[in-house]
Image (cartoon, rainbow, N blue to C red):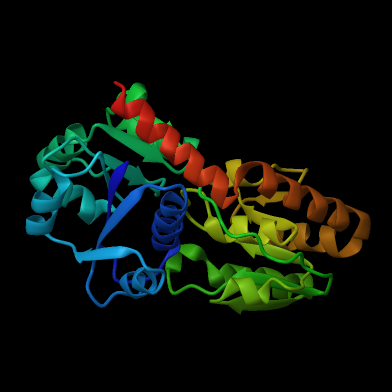
Length: 298
């Protein structure tokens, strides 16, 4: 297949890593991939280093290149807008956030123009259906993350350092302080997940939580907010604990893992198993290809 992936973000967040992983996985399977990206963005730089074909994203390139493709796949909201305005063939859209679709005439028209949606979780799929998108136009494809070395035990709680106020770093710090545990917040998680008692991830809203998936790949017990797609990522009581965003509740979950070594080990083993069964890069790429074929045959 000839596949056009469009991603307009400047910053390298979870969705941009998924765009890169998808492009590389599609190429490995023999498909021809072109990426429409922001010139000078980190994603563009990493894609070029990987040997992928990139072009500057915009209405002109969307119009010029979309007609030559078998699949046009918008990866973010702005790319969705460009596809709605300029794509010469039916297109797909990835939806990664679990908050409601913005109402309004233009938004409604934009969402109706897509042939289909690739939702990152059932929680995201539900929000699309609430916005009036027919269920047959939605496919759920979980994110995939690289396999990383299993972690070893320590007394430190690991977490993702984020400038996004919705990620509740402040609450994580307060809860760890109440539990008497050290919190290490990191931007580069793959390096940080070499050891730890648990991975703590608190968020007001979450499509799925790729940082949690990476911690699961490392065999890290998970404590996460009971919200959005995190409920699907973490099998509560099997690979981790889900908590309300309340300091005492989070601290109690942390203390439970600190005091029960067997529980921690069991969560660690099961988190790793859950990653291997649901959240590998191969699984993400293959399920995305399944969605492409299903929509093309409709």
